[in-house]
Length: 525
Image 1 (tube, helix red, strand yellow):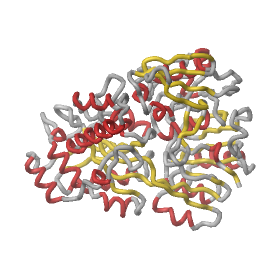
Image 2 (spheres, rainbow, N blue to C red; image 1 turned 180 degrees about the horizontal axis):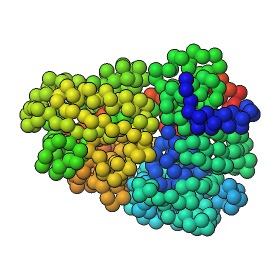
Image 3 (spheres, helix red, strand yellow; image 1 turned 90 degrees about the vertical axis):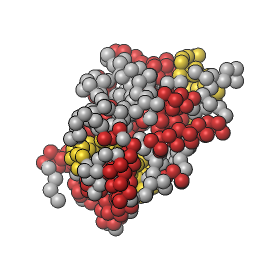
Image 4 (cartoon, helix red, strand yellow; image 1 turned 180 degrees about the vertical axis):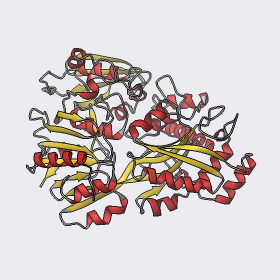
């Protein structure tokens, strides 16, 4: 197995650092996009942030709430539009500064700003008040029963540190901006940033002043994080002992890793769905061969594409049975998911061809598919399979696969006509899907809606979910929204991911359905 000199140097350096059993050498396919905790709402980015920064609330591996920087929270007894959070006393940031309510107010206001990729989660908040040093009130536009669910990846920064280092504003990631907060960090979390080489190596050390030292195992004294994009190289590093823990064991290597003495594979269904998005709102597309019109604007074309994708074949051949075919873009973890909707799509090439003919595209057309190659399990291979499947109905797909750091801005900036995306739902509620992916882009919503889709009536229903306290009414609204999303074929679902973590026997942990390891829980044997 050939390992590049650059990577080999990083791994050898990691091995030297890893002489102690308390060092964990961690690898996954892609790196965190930035250290700015509010700039990108993206899984690997949050995973690294969770080691350094902390939210008010986190979820454990079962999905249940657990106190973090807040000890308890509840709606105000005096005002149903107010949530009251009591903060943990005696917490300090890594530079020794005291954690107070002022930092919470600053961090949430920062996360609600224009450049933040987290603002959709907080659009029901109208005011944040520091009642005293350890009490914060969140005022919402109407009662919001699910506000705490939106906070589990909302990290708290030190206001004084941000002000002193010109980091009050959120990094404009899509615009290519670099800031102090995108390359440095100062959190309250269990680990302290020691060094950072993006896409090469990040080193963290245990925070011995961490408030939770006696509450969690805290066995890991050092984390050496090495992104390894190439799947074969990543597995080779685990097999050779150069890394201890990888998050994304390739499906073709599950047996090989699991049957190796001293190694183990642990699996669980992931709270994430993989799908394709379509630019259906443009009058004409930039990356097709149809002049003066947009074939994706025709619902019959979208239906045909949906029918052409053979999800069972992808599961068997590409994913080696490590996926669950999907008919909707939300996994079973999520409130609003139904088995009926998830089983609503079947492959029918002949019917798809007939729909193409009815739509006026019997001779087909060509289009570019933008795909990441280092973000999801077998992402590029899934796209390659889709190319062949769509060819059967006359659609010639030109595949352009690139690293996620270049792929995601295409979606955020609406510079793609046909793209792959994966979506996890940390709130476990459909509102999260609708706010980011379905609502009209703008007004602090729809930031990942690259479809050009706008439905004002649906927008009103989506917005109502944040303040509807009658759960029966709310669930019916969710069902009504899904009915439109499904009928309009806004997205082409592929499958729900299955997570496979590989590790040495020295590493003790359970798989997190969010694919976000929290090393303070790890026990080193």
